[in-house]
Length: 91
Image 1 (cartoon, rainbow, N blue to C red):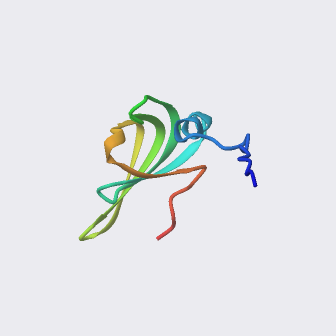
Image 2 (cartoon, helix red, strand yellow):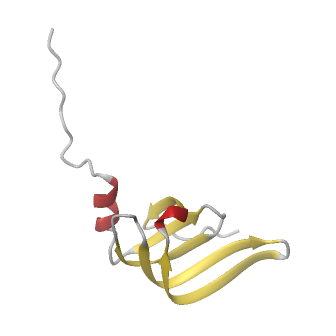
Image 3 (cartoon, rainbow, N blue to C red):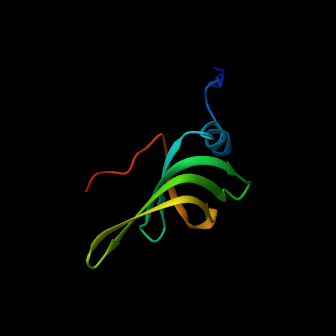
């Protein structure tokens, strides 16, 4: 019996998916539990990212601290999860 492997043409590699997100909102969870939402402007092979219109949320002992930034450059080594089109959860 022979088995055939079919490839799904809609299957994307991770960097291809990130590339499709350029110009749209993206929700990023960082290793230090910071959460960032912004408009992806560009990235490189190391997934360092340039974001515009950024909201950064961080848990502190006093509560959740939210910071608004015009632009940010993220180091790809510190990214845990990317959610294309995601928005900051209301907590």
